[in-house]
Image 1 (cartoon, one colour):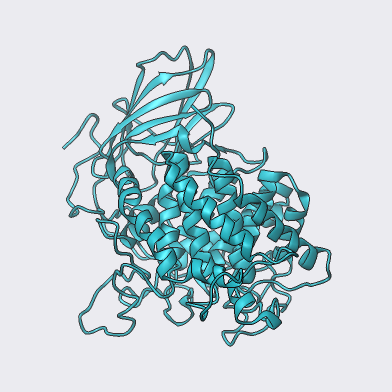
Image 2 (cartoon, rainbow, N blue to C red; image 1 turned 120 degrees about the vertical axis):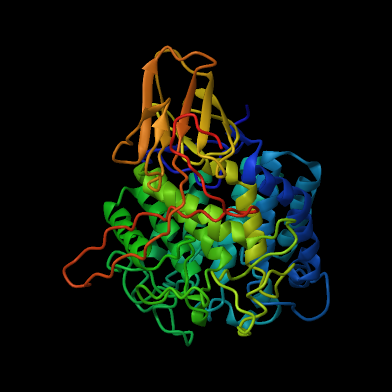
Length: 551
């Protein structure tokens, strides 16, 4: 099977290594349905919207190929870049010449619009050429650049054309010349470029991209982001990243920043970066996370609120925040090997993220409150599913994650294969290949059959979610290791060997986390809720936990 690396491929410092996108073939359950609907409906819708929304026409205007006024928001380019990434990962999953043709056409438009010095941003080239990098507190210039870098990495890894990466590298080299060696200490008010620069470094080996990402992370908290009218917490410029104890401000910006912080640790080995990110994760899970795994309780500023400020009917819980949370949790899992990050990833995936898209894949939620009231008219536009939005950051973000979901199911190490998320299909890694048969999350029985294993000792590690009160492996009561995994390590695995994992899906209410005094007391991470919202089906009680039980 061809190896196609996924969205995050860290250095050898990672405790766990991600499998390739084609190393997981999902054949059943919600994830398979999401990927089918994404391919058949959502991605075609997104491609059509790239013209109607102005994303592509704006770039043609920047290239001098089209007249007329700029359309949309100053960050309209990023919609196209996320759509390109979605198309690239979908091509990696199931190749289609139409996807490579779209990427090549878009790359040609981008190359024509790009200035000779490498700068590329249609809004500032068309509307405010005299203000380039003069409004970083709200310009989104580096934010847009980051999404282009990620799209180019995806296209390169997926074998989806060879013209997008040169455009992205010229832009990245321009950023290096301006912000790393050119004396400009500015940072974007919307974090995102940090993790993108690091992934481009991983792909190309160019150390300048890693150095620039490190500088941008280290410059947070120095007051270098001028006030956009929202205050320094809004853009995480209130404290240096190593000193901040709790996530604050715009939730998506904070979560993208955290992904970059963990990526930077993985490439540099700076333990202080991992320590501070874990500290904020623990505080967020204990005090600022909804039962659905959603983040961001305030419509004002799309922001984290105070600790324990989690109103159900006024939750913002943006779909982009769910995507960014999955990115952060995945990197923490790779960095530490601890199952609690896979637990939260699962909770977000099957709840906050699952709620973001209609069953037919044609309508999307921007915000995801936990309660709907007919008399709540505020934010009626954002609070209901729509086919598209004027600010359409969420739909293509959802599409790029669904297309790459296979890369988030499992990892490998020298010991063997680790299964983190359970979905029907075939998974390869660590020298082995297994088939997974399950009706999860509707049923707690997961049957793993070995199809191939190396000679000698080989380990199969199964995550036991913290919400499973009673778990059986092969009809025996099983207790996970302290990192949340049950490991079966032995020699002489044979094709056809089967392991049965039976998780307790008995539903129980999720208690609110206890309030604690802030002074002199560290908050332990709250155990993820045992409540799973049944995406696409009504919740129903399960008697799970008995060996071999399949209701």
